[in-house]
Image (tube, rainbow over all chains, first blue to last red):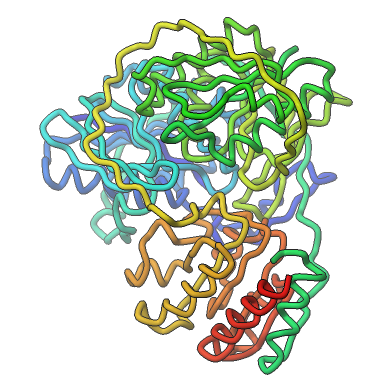
Length: 247
Length: 321
């Protein structure tokens, strides 16, 4: 069994979001970078659990980004990946990034490709579906449970207004979210061994970016809260009805 | 240029999020001086001509029963064929569960630039720039799409549905449907409840409710308002409530008209899931709770006293109006 896990670096969930250069660039100053939580807590940890059940399983990681992604990739190796690929390029365009992952994936002959359901910075939720289409593999999005039964994947996934369980023969691309696994913390042995695990840098394939970010905006600042006394609930109802027209 | 909108249906009925996408696509066509058409798959119980009220001229229907079950790979394949057939240059999806699963595959198949989570019509004065939600609702990005075919998926609850007059022509399309590799073995629908991402009003509870046995007051309020119920991450992690109710940065992101938070302190990760809500009400006994800073209205008080009163007062208001 060979599994490819797509990893992205994102600002920590508590980061202050600000922009610079006339609101055209994200202000990275003071930002703590982490593995995108969906990639780490759910996709990577589930892959590690599958390897614990079947130690012959091989876990490859792939990220698309510049050298500053390497601490995050090392952390993913410390958690339990076997080796990693970094495609040495940077882009905000999902088609361009998916093409780079596709190039790595098609050479590795993977049984299973995991992604997080989205990154918490760009919120694209596009890479898994694009890579699946490029590889002509089935795609199961928003998985909440994942199991293997021989060479069949048994997956629970979120659908409109509920959940369904489905079965599909490998290979398959799966996007993971809450429920698939639980967050782990790397142990000392993992951290030590991660230093010597292979991290291969590959140059990007020729591909076009089909989109580009022209600027960022912050949402308008709220006017401030209107407080109503706990003994005057009727006033809150009046405000919601007459002023906010929300009820 | 022409606009093609994907209509998501469940058990034969068109979803609310799809009506928003239709209105958006219709307005986009008007803005760019072209026509809007829609596509819908599988067995449909509704009168499709009526979808003309949302500003579209044609509905392309692929009726194959094989499309009654959703498979992202199969749907992407069929949609790509319809895009080719109709020569569409902009394809609009809703950024709901179905749209998230299928729109990227279509983008890869037809080599289209894609913007997911769009919140407004594109600015076409200089390119084709779509505003989208980023950083889990903490900011917006303006993204230019430069490819010939463009794909937009629209965040639910960010574009108002407007029904006018008009009838659409229904065209039955005979498109070959590839066989699905996915076998669905069980489906569990949350019945009788309002789906969280589509709800106009969301009532959400946090640790301040002290335990799952106290959710009755929240449910009474939600029921009175026809609202969906939600919760904070600690509540879902403690298994007081199911995971699909968890709202926040790593849970569901919602954008209702009204979000009522009961006993939730408002950690930055929770705010990331709710800050696109139009009006936020916070009820918390701690006046220092950070959520009050993000709220429009607030009551500093004990949820166990305030919430039943709130439900009563809303019932009175509803009876009077």
